[in-house]
Image (cartoon, rainbow, N blue to C red):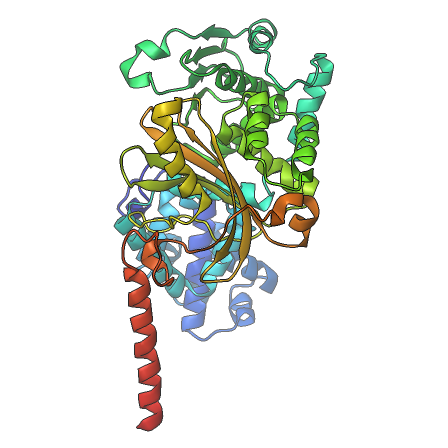
Length: 515
């Protein structure tokens, strides 16, 4: 997918630069600019061109495109030419805006996720075109500096969509339950791999090949690849190196595509190339269906009620619940992130996955979701050092130390009460650290963090277990103001720079008073 920085007037357009939407907007923008430059009110131009005021207003907003004779009348009313009005050139000041229109980006980005429509956005742009054009130019330069692509924007939009719905979709839950009922599949804590395969091959005519992917050098890391749309016979390549639960999940995901009529010519796991927001949305919905099938919400809620009812934290019990469902810790926690806000009222929470390369100090956030607002633990600078006081990082350290002795099946559970230094927000966090099955040198830790509020104290009995540590934490060492931290990896260079700037501003304010 092309870089966002390629959006320029000379860039090859992803879609036709002469789309009806672009033609309407460019004409409306030119009319609005010319009219304002000449100081003419809307009613005067409408009268000169013999048009209704409301119709001219619609044209300026990019909602209508008039017939040639009316464009000619408008050109005469504004003292310009027909050719100038219908030209797609916007002039030097609006050059970045022209590039945005030609690129087709407004048609690629799912504006509805952010409560916008293309027309509504264009109306905003037409109100202050030069300022908006400068803003787009700024975005393009930032994108070029940080190598941002349209794919990054689509993935961010998908994450926003999921967070807005608190990662819970009742319609998909009901679809999964309907499927289970119609096919007389009992609720179980362990997946029936043979039954899932049989359903795809007999009901939907799938051919399932679980031998090819491991033999192809460039495809060995792929979990699954499926070809087949509405008419062709579907063929699924499934990586036999995966655990039985992972294979079951991918088979259930294919059933989700079929049950919800989410037709794609090719699907891959993981996604190799993002082509549209709909592709991401279909993948998410099918994956959600699979999670709902394999990690039944009714069974999970029952298990969680027993777990949360304990007065003392029991990491072994949490690991036992995870193992009972045979899911990976990441899929298990991701499913909990869907269920807990809905059934336990813990809506102020976050989900985060840390990845750690064994034998190094390199720790990065691989995935994160934040419900209702951005919470304390979130990704920041690429090369910064995340706070070593977090339960996630401490669990990764413990896992790394124990893995050589206890093997790749090891799961380390942890819990912590945390108070963020910068905000004083308090969180109760639980985590599971585990080896990444796909990479022998990589460990991961998934964490659910809940804001310490009345809802948490009502639902989780062990929230105040005296055996659990309470830690003051920061974001990264570079940004942290905690003095004499025994876990600090590097100096607080960003915090020091910010403090220096604060002192400078205070000194300037004092100097202004004294002058």
